[in-house]
Amino acid sequence: MQVSTANDVKIYNLSAGKSIPEWISNRKRRKLEQTDVDIRRRIQLIQDFDMPDVSHTIDISPDGRYVFATGTYKPFLKCYDLKDLSMKFSRGLDADAVKMTILSEDYSKFIILEEDRYLEMHVSYGRFFRMRIPKFGRDMAFCREASDLFIVGSGPEIYRLNLEEGVFLEPLSTGSPSLLCCQFNSFHQLFVCGTIDGRIEAWDHRDKSRAGILDCATAVVGNCSVLPQVTCVQFKDALNMAVGTSTGHILLYDIRSSRPLFVKDQNTGLPIRRVEFVSERELVLSMDSRVIKMWNEKTGKPFAAIEPETKLMDFRRYPDSG
Image (cartoon, rainbow, N blue to C red; front, side):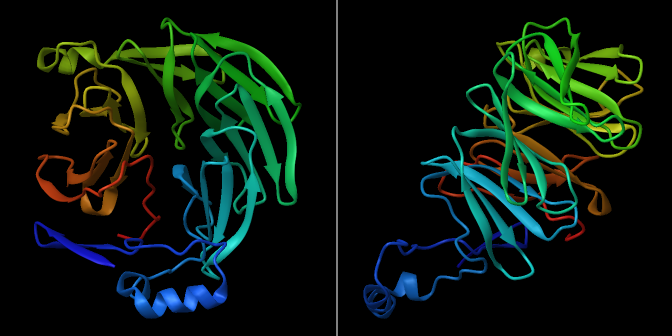
């Protein structure tokens, strides 16, 4: 275990240190634990909480009990039970996962978007169905009101798959050549997607109309030489939203205004991969491939930072955990 301090905030790395290969015999395992100090002092809170090579995505079930992780090589999905601190199951995948969406409250229903234009639908006993999508997908979001799965990717269309009937609905056509990210607002079901030309397009799925366009590039274009792309989007509540760009900026918006409330520069020049809010502390967590920064959403004052030695791919903050 490693401990670091930033702004008087202690950060504990519980997964630091060496790991023991699964194929090693029990006798050699015991010998290594006796001779190697790093292995002897390691902490393994959750059984097999790792991937063979690289971890791609991580997610937490709505009931807070299960953690899903995907990675490679070979392409794998693992599910962990936090109550038992152990791995519940693992499944091999046909291709690397791009995004995962949990449909049920627990581990029993989820969908995986894969790199080779496939969707995999899983249930508790295994893979239920696998289907092809028209374009390479980059993100997806589930509308619980209509049981529609919205998929965005390398094209201007927003594809809609109705999971109740199992059919594609007429796609929504945006004004951008390519889409990178999307999300539903859980309060009023407004659907937003980030485009490759630095805009946010908002859609009302109930009447299939575009509610508005937000040009985020104009807020940061003066600080960079290239046109920023919208790489991630995250809602805080019904009105407040965070937008991450490919130039390493995070823009905080009230959706009633076209001007950002605050613009934060991550100061790495790397694309923002994920943003989350900590409402009770008025903090924003922003991540690129190098560092996770925590800062005040009103002033931008740094609170803490996590900068591991390895590349960052994804993160989740456990709900209501501080």
